[in-house]
Length: 109
Length: 288
Image (cartoon, rainbow over all chains, first blue to last red; front, side):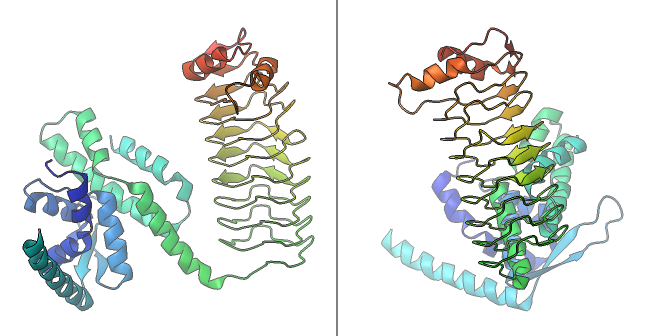
């Protein structure tokens, strides 16, 4: 893993938005979320289970996402997470905030 | 191997047994970890590597568990009744569930808290003489700076409980497992302790002169700057126990260490070596 401590902290600050992005495409359960984030980052970033669940609880408490039981044919039942309308709005606003920050930092750094 | 994973999680989540939201988190996490483990095995990893990688993927779970537990505590807190500064002598609280209640500066002499779940409650500055806490859950309770004389703690659950600076004369701790409990700055000379296990307990600055800890088990306990003259640890088990003096230059602590009886005790190599360095009498000790 290339990322050092500082970049990994900076990335972790965006966990909520990363999760909202994934859920805006499709419903997922916990392990799928961490796996997709590892895959999409090309293995450069690994979202830890603990960080993911801490984000998920926060998003749930804020009403950005909700969960339902999946109906797995085999194995234990899984909790699927789904984005709410409020969550979609949060995602757009976080994303535009980030683009704004990025524009400024690109000029300054 | 699934058993090994759930074993691992049981350990991590043990302090939060009974908190529903935390139990949910544990179940979610376990099914994630099992799936990851299966995938790593399918990729051809050996058991040990797959297990280690699975555990590593969890990250800093303690913090998340704490957040989740705090969240549900704050929901339970809605129904808080303040018992502060009340006269509740001889009250019957047996078997009640009272999380994060406030019993500060109250007269609770002779009250019955047996079997009660008092997780996170505070009793600071109260008179709790002769109270009965048998079988009570006192996880995260603040029992510091209070009068606990002649109270009883038989089979109570003491996890991260703070009992520092309290009066424990005649207090009975029987069949109690102390986990990460703070017992610092207490006078335990007239405290009754039978068949107790001390895991990560802090006795710093306490007065343990003449104390009998025979047959008790101590894991990760600290006895730093403690008065230990003539204390007895006969047939006790000591693992990773720290004995340190206040000032390196005073001989008082070292003289006290020499008066402790460790006959028949079992201890790990580190504890043994440290005590040996302080010239304790370890002639009848078994190193485990």
